[in-house]
Length: 342
Ligand code: ACO
Image 1 (cartoon, rainbow, N blue to C red):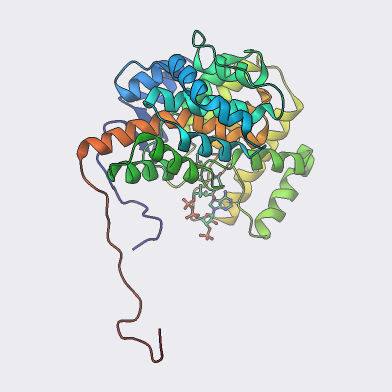
Image 2 (cartoon, protein in one colour):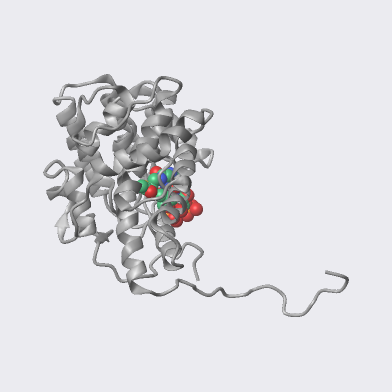
């Protein structure tokens, strides 16, 4: 028995397949390479939900419910703001997806006046506008949202399905899923990827820094994956989106990132020869979101803006099955009472 449930298929799903051996992600039959950059987030949500979303109206409804709370809140970490707001929210799935965007953007305003949503804009453009007051580079954010909206039975989606199986609502499933997403082994990695790049500072220092980090027993953020044994396909589509954003202009940051990635892959292959550890989606995510001037402590919140659509698709699929998820545990403790009072 493994404590990480690896290799155990816990549900049947029609939503997506993550093929770790071949590095493929299929969403409702489409490879991710055919979706990123080709469709907007709204179409991705329609694919996931098999129904047309109304995200603009959802953002406005969420704003109407939450703006009083947001104005009264002390400054909190971005994901804490989202959890708090979702816990107070009442509404349908469009309102929940809208609320995550409204809450992330509001948390990023940090004392500056909040910006109300505009239902006529795309989700990506309005999210940027509510954060920064402008919508520049919305295509790149749209590509990111499409890329990470759905990814099989990852930890946060599993959490959402467990909560939905109890009959709890979609907002509760999303709050629980977000708490799972926040951990550094899941959606909390991209901020630390940038911290690592900053600490290394120059391509010439990459190999020595990485070597020391591995010798000290640290995990390199942005590398490794439970399912992928080859390169995460999302890393490539996001690097392509980043290339389009930067118009393929050389930059010192990208040169540093390339040197760090090469040094990390070389060192991981040497340190963990039995374990193929490749670049995961979070490495490219960090570079793309940084290029969009999104603060690094909001990266996990931006991830949630996309993944909430996948959580909801899975929560609904689970709820439709009508079956409570209640696995068993192998008890390995004592079967006779130890001496003395309990
Ligand atoms: N850096 C250094 N060593 C690593 C890394 C890494 N990034 N990833 C795995 N390893 C090592 C482990 O320490 C372990 O070594 P050991 O056998 O000597 O103890 C071996 O490789 C196997 O590791 P596992 O923990 O079994 O790998 P698992 O598949 O469970 O972990 C995980 C996957 C959690 C993503 C891991 O690779 C990791 O911690 N990566 C860094 C954090 C990160 O980038 N997270 C984002 C993941 S993508 C996402 O969730 C959206």
